[in-house]
Each structure stands twice: as structure tokens, then as C-alpha cells.
Image (cartoon, rainbow, N blue to C red; front, side, top):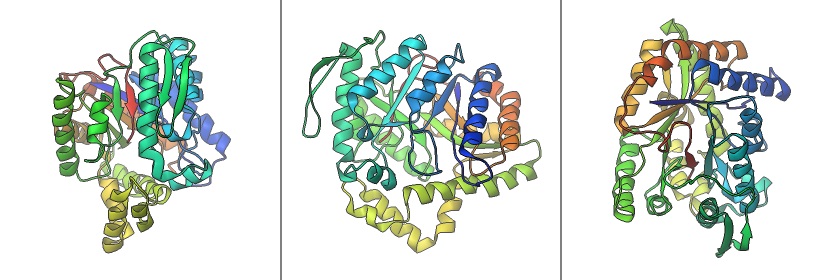
Length: 371
């Protein structure tokens, strides 16, 4: 089983400067390869303390020079916020300097604060995502980018350095709704599960997507990957305290950043689902939603953490895990201990698991896309 770790660059508590947060997250990433993780990840976000990694390609290129083996993945790069030419160039530079270890993630975005900061109409995001993704993925196959879409028009232009390995069959979506399942299947994109829905809903949507993927591509879809926030401690009561304070702290930060409680999202084209979610939160209360989101994550003793991860893996027949250890205002010393204990007691057991599938066809080399 493929097991990666993700930096998060979150600065919620205010007890650290942004510089101290960066030093800590880089130190966590530096531990990944020696501890035996298969990949290092980072997510693109802008303008607030939720995640302070506005240029994922820059960070991963830095990590390429500090590592030799691990994959280097974005979770994700948000296409509507980029010029596709520049994003394609940045990704190929990363792939070249890392000797083929680049793991690309692309998505359409959800944070209203970010669309406003970039002066981009959020209601255009799904259409822009499809047009940009088609142009970029084709450029990775041919070495040339071109488009004549509604939002993206690009004369045929060479991308240098030229790609030296295919990205086909190595693309994943961070979520898939019934509306976007056919789009993702047509683009050859698999699924990265960042749990925000009941597992039974996730499984049902995943099965629908797999059926559409088989129909369009005449082959099975790639096995999904699961991303989880982890709290691992030898003392179960301490792990429970970490869950209560820091996993729930992360969950509340996600609610605030994405405005899951904002019913106005229903009025934005392509985000109707989140309007329904906001109405549900209004009915049951913010605290109940925070609890629901937190309970989808993983916490406990090493044995409990292992069992929870394997239970989730079996639910969706996943090929791999991306684990996050530093979040929610957690003290830096505690997050380091969290990661080291997981690496010592849980990681070896997970890597011994045969899951009858790989991440992107080869260890540490996949492409990820977010809805």
C-alpha cells in the first residue's frame, strides 16, 4: 500500500509566526523520506491562515532538491487560478529536476475568498476546469498546448522542457459529484477521497463513477487514494484529547474557509450541492457538522489508527493513503511526535498490505485532480 504524507502550512492558533510555520512544515517534509513515506504532498490555498502554500510547484521543486526517492504531489493545484501555459511549464520543470517524481493535482476550487482575491467568477470554475485540464493533459502527451474553448483560447505553443513521460491514467479527482462524474471519467481522472460526506454516500458516488468510467474508457478506473488527518498516540486518552482539540479544530477551520454554512453558495453555478449542505448545517447546527467532519478522520493508539485506516481502505478499495499530521493549531512538538510514532508503529504495517493496485501505476508517480 502506498503511504504518503502531506504538509499543511496551517497557522490557526496565532502562537507561531508564518516563518516559524514554514520552518516546521519543511522539517516535517524532510522527515518523510528517512521515515519511509512514499510521497510528499502540499495543497494550494491563498489569502488566509487555512493553508499558506500559494505556490505548490515552488515548494515541491524545493523538496525535489532535498530528496532522492519520494514522489512530490500537489493536493491540489486549482486550475481557474492559473494560466495553463505557466502551470504546465512549472509541472514539467518539477518532473525534470526530480527525474520523474512529479505528482500533479489539479482542481476547480471551492474557497470564495480565493476566487474574489484572484478576481475570477466562481460560477465559471467548472467550465474553466474542464477546458484547462484538457489543454494541460494534452500538452503533457504532445509537448504542445492549444485550445479554442469558451474561456480558454490558446494558439499552438511548445511547452519546454518537453514532457518525457505520460500522465495518462495517472490523474485523480479530490471529489466527484454525480454532475461531474462523466467529466472526470472522460478526462481519465481517478479519485482522491478527502472525506466530507458519509461513507455510504462516498461509496455510492464512487461506484457510479466507476460504472461511467468503464462505459467511456472500456477499462477499470484507477483505484482511489484516501487523504486523512491523523492523531496517533500510545495513550488512547491522549489521542482522544488530540481529536477533540485539533482534529475538531481543523474541521472548524475547513467550515470557516470554505463557508460550508453559507446558503449563498447555492446561487453560484456549479456549487448547488454546497447550498444544500448549508441548509443542513442551519438545521442541525455548526457543532454537529464539525463533529461529523472530524469523525471521518483517524485517531487513537497505533493499533486503532491502523485498523481505522484499513477499514476505510476496504470501504473504497483504495490503493493508497495520504496522511496529515500537523493541523488545527497543534503544537509543533506534538505534531512531530504524531508523525514519528505513526512512522514507527503504523507505516510498516500499511506498506506490507497488498491492495491489488498501485497509485498511478507506479509508486510515487501519479497525477491528481480535484473537482
